[in-house]
Image (tube, rainbow, N blue to C red; front, side):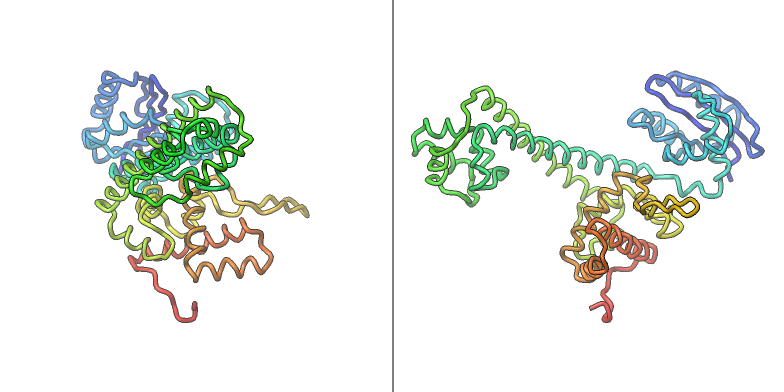
Length: 396
């Protein structure tokens, strides 16, 4: 039973602390620097207010990377510390009519939020293992975004240097990327001897199958309308080098995500991957964002956490268009969309449901979101009851 509720508002260089007891009375407040002396000052204040650390609960908002060190410090000291979604604190603060905003007031708001929700604390908490898994999953998402951005930049450069190349092959295979490092434009191909081009292509494939012949590349380069721009060729080589590095890093982080998830949530991972269309990577990302399914009272809470719950504006006779709220976890919403699209593609049960909703007149994205709702309801039931996906006969 928690008796002391501590709220911490964190910034880059400092943090503010406010504490309330079971009656809502303020016990102590302080401001300290984000360093070892500030952490020690906070720990001493906690010890002086309550000798039994098991009766203390600390809450802080997720603030980029700034909260992590303090979170780790308190957790290692045996103090129950949880990370709270800033949106929940923002909505809770609106219950007050006063619009004053200071760091200390924000800390007090977090402390009172903990007091009000003391019986649902576990719904807001995440273990250190889940937090680390989430860090890995979000690093992978970041790398995917960087790779997509770099590919777009490469495409723009090729539109100047060799615009016809995309029509005869996939320029983003490792074979073609390695080849373009040596011959980054139609000009360099035209000005080189055919046997050198063939040797470069052969060495670039590294045993992989070549999807386009040397003759086709040379013939296309000779008739190309590409511009001559040596500076852009140098830039393209740099972009390709960056992309190859990012792809290598993505493979490493993907393997780490899979192995780490298997070590801490193997059963849940196996349950999710029993659904055709959900692979180990997307399942691990899903679990990284959700954590324990016990944190959610119902599938509706899980849907709201993803931010794909319906949001309707209605006043009097006016009723606005229905759309998703987008108020939940954007990382979770992204992986849900990816999973749903993949499941629709290969899983006949969910594909049939998707097609039925399309036939009823729903636009593509709305039909996908409706299918995502059905998928989340199914996943919630499976994880709650520790059961694997089985197709009922009447679903066939």
